[in-house]
Length: 511
Image 1 (cartoon, helix red, strand yellow):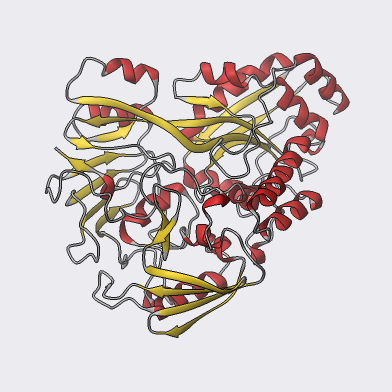
Image 2 (tube, one colour):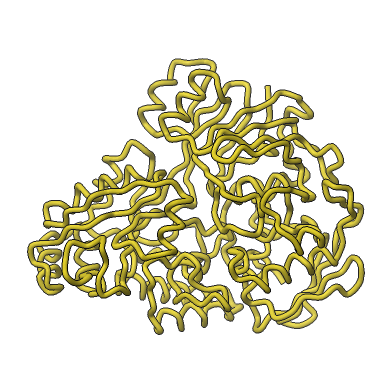
C-alpha cells in the first residue's frame, strides 16, 4: 500500500531518524568533534515521554523507528526491512536482522511489542498518541510483528516514523537517565540544562556517520547561539535572520544558510474557563467566538512578519503549503480594523481588554510584535516568555488566557496538529495532548475522526480541509507565520537545514 499520495512531508532530504543508506555526506569517517548550539531544552532522556521537537532531536541520535521517509516522500525501511497489509486493518512488519542495542542485546520482535505496549498502557507517555489507532500488537515470530488497528488508518506508517524502539528491558522500567537504543550514536553524557554529548556507535548496523563525536549546547538563546558560532565555541547554531546574514556576508569562516520550514506559529486562547486570572475582566471574553474573530480580523500577518528579526512567511492556515490538507483556496485576508472593533463590541468588550500572553521563548519576537499590533484595538497584552519546559508544564496545568506556540506536522499530514492541538482532550484515544486552550467542539471532533479512516487521497484531503475550515470559522486558534530555518555554519562543516527543525549529527559532513 503506497502512502505517497497521502501527503508525506517534502522533507527534501533525509529521514527524520538518522541517515539513510545512500545519503552519506561526501566527507566520510572524519573524527572532527562538532559543537552545535541549539535552543532546545530537554527534561528527560526517555524517548517515549515527550512529543516535542526538542526531545526528538536527541532521541533520533540514539534510537530508531520501524520505518522512516526518504527524499522521494516514500516510506522506507529502518528497523523493519519490509511490510505488508493482509487486510485493511492488519500490518505485518518483517524486521532487520543482525541489529544490536548499544548494550549488546540483539534486536527482535519482542522489543517492538514491548515498546508499543508500554505506550499503549501509559497515556502519560506523550508518544502514545501515535498508537491511538492500534488495537493490538504481537510477535508472530522472532523477526515478524503483527499490528492491528481499530479501523483502516491511512497514515499509520507515517505515525510509526515517530515511535523509537526501545529494548524489552527498557520498556518495563524508567528510561529517564539511561540510553540504550540501536541508533548511530551512543550517549556520553547529559548535563541537564547545559549539554548533551554523544559519540559514534561503531557497531551500528548501517553506514557510520562522518562525525565521530558531537556536543550540543542546550537552551541557547538567539544571541547566544550566534555568538557561539561567530566566536568559535560552536560550529553550527540558529541564526536570527536578516541581520545575521549581513554580519557574515564578508566572512570566509562562517556562512549563512536558510530554507522553508514546517513550523507554524499560532495564537491560542483559553476557550473553556469562565474566568481566567490572565484576563483583566470579570469574565473570560475569549470563550466568545466574536472576541476570537476580532483578533483574527485585526492581525496584519504580512506586517507582523516584516517586523521580525527572524525569517518567516505569513500563515493564513495551520499548515504550510506542502503539508497534506493545505487548502490552496485559502488566502491571507487583509486586516479589517473596523470589523474587529464591531466584533469586540459584540463580544462585550468594545474598549478592548488587558491580559497576559504566555509564549515559548523561541517565539517571543512574534508575541511582542503581535501585542504591539493589537494595542490600537485596546487589547493590552503583557508578554511573558518562558522556556519550553516551563511553558508546557504551565499550559497543561492551567490554560493560559492567551498563548503563542508553534507546531510542525512532522509526518507530513495535517491530522498531526488537528489530533494533538485541536481535538477535544481524550487521552485514551490519543487526542488533545497539546490542546492548551481546551477546545471542545463536537463538530470539529467528528470531522477529524472521519478523515482518519478515509484511504482515498482526494477524499481524505477534502475531509482534512473541512476540519481546518471549521477551525478557521470558529477562530479556535489564529495562525500567524510559517518559520523559515536559518543557521550560521562554520566553513569546516557540511550542513543542509531540515524543514522539520531537527539538527542531526548523522547528516553532517566535515571538510
